[in-house]
Image 1 (cartoon, rainbow, N blue to C red):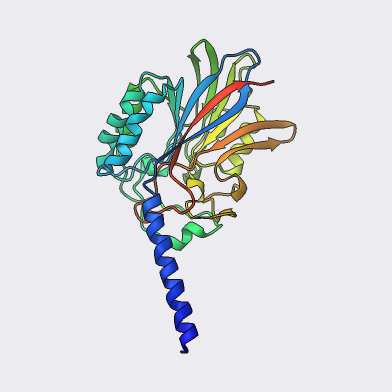
Image 2 (image 1 turned 120 degrees about the vertical axis):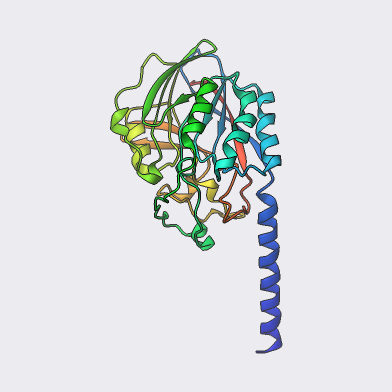
Length: 300
């Protein structure tokens, strides 16, 4: 092997090590995103919606817990959690303690696979594969019933294959959601049908933004759909974007605001890049962990 080849190999290895080190560091750069979207009924007052997703908490992650606790200072009107809260059973109590300061606000939630089951080891290269990963049900469950009870004790409503009505600051909200499509637990037929046309906000909520769920929701004409699951791609290329979505949504819509269209129906879609990672792939690159404060305003 000649010197040029050895030098190239050394430079490549050093660059790879630097990128990996940065990815481990970036995974702890918890970020608040802000966005505005005009989806409310004309004449309605604005509504501040805090979207939390994919916390993937280990009970030892004190900085993440402190970040979650600090979010109450934003004084949201509504909190929506789109699932994958846990990594281990020991995380339930500290998670609920960190979210408790937000319990003054009305809220809603759906669950993802890592609310029901702990993560399992997978080839890290699958995080940059465009093919959705096959999910195998492990034998051990996480204490998701305890998590559900805790979130409901805040007054937050469970939208897993359910519908709900909320009155928030004088606004009437019509909500529906599905259980985790990544585990094939979604049963949209249980909630299908027209939204309340008089609602100030018609809101759909799901964990994983699989196209079948987005299509079904959008056909019933919600104003806004919220989802998580994708981690924003988790490993992105600066100037290009996400390499993978871990579902069948296209990479261009892997995080942030976009629009979903089914025939004549159009819905705003917000996909959160989430706050955590799998413990077996604890890195992010060009994709900081996030929660999002969405300021909802009336349609023009």
